[in-house]
Length: 81
Image (cartoon, rainbow, N blue to C red; front, side, top):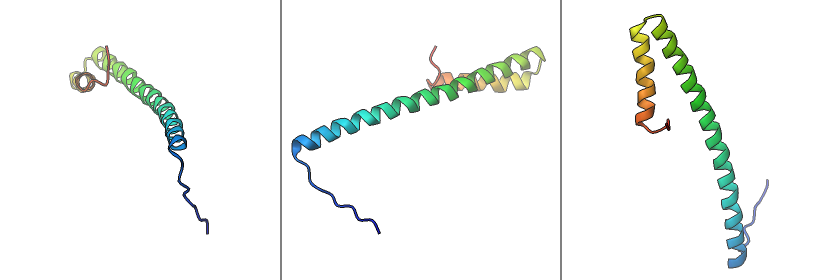
């Protein structure tokens, strides 16, 4: 069994610890945002490719499906142009 003991910190130590924790959280958030952008970009290019193929093969139902996905992403402001 492992026991943890919490030791109170002085206000100066607590502030320093909070500042360090905030830096770590921000650095992790940046990594998460970059990864999310890669996934969205990949999905966007795949959908644009599918839309292009549907247009060339004259498949209106498929073209409408891919076009509506792109438009919904623009409306939800996840695609910046």
